[in-house]
Image (cartoon, rainbow, N blue to C red):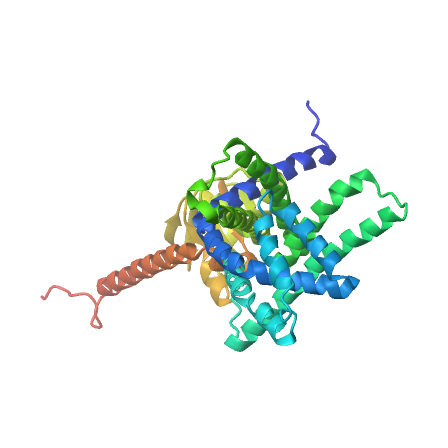
Length: 422
């Protein structure tokens, strides 16, 4: 007899299946939510906010290190690392504006910071939509929060530039940093930046899920840069139809794809956040290949004769029937027989009352077990499921009403049955 594989051997396979499922769900959600279209809108706002962001970044770094020229150099270094081969057109404008005598005035800095709010507000709406978060705010409070998030984002970039200054200072004084750190540090900063953006606009999402989405975004960003450089090297005429605006066109395209990668990472985090909800939906859609642990937790397999619930008892679960058939018995009489695709136990589940009937398996059954927490998530994430349940409940109510009327018509009158005279 073959021995069962140990748990430490099964776990990597389970993780791999779960990761593949999450990535597949994220890609489907990316297409379903038209995230490329969302990225195009965000790219427009990002283009408008690009110069103000870099100006504020230069001012902030200059205040921190006490040198405007070094601040400009660190900003240039950051832009060249982020925007391959075409960041110079942006930097020329930043240098010209930074050298303008009144640019650093307090009022002008506030105006520059305020120009970030359309981008931050649009990004907040998109991410809250992906995570199904509903947080109504007053207009002014929402704009002030967007302003605070924008300033926090620039502060994070300033810290990145400050880390570059510190690394250069250590190098000038003979301190050699590990070679691996030069490769790992930019990736870690990209992960931290993406995580900060996702965390700023989401509530109730586990940090580990946001970290997975941030890592996905960072990996895609690091793959996108060499791919874009290769494209420009292979096709030097890319965007040439825009003439003098070619560099600006390339900046917009780069922002567009970068934001699309951010949204894909957000979809990964959202898919992880949905958790059991996605697993249940996969089961209801007939895609039953789940990781073993998830299947054991969500799927109930019972033999014929198994009693799911008894009339009058309390119960907090409902069931979706994947395979088999069940009998619904009320007051000792069978009132319904349900087969694959039906659900039962919803009355006590929704109303919090005692079971109104006894449900027994008439054949071996496989059911999806739904409790209060994942049901609320199902209602929020998949409203079409609510519609299907309402239609089924209305059909059952209609059938029950028709049977009641038929039974009432069949009852004898008050005088009893007619008897022949004589």
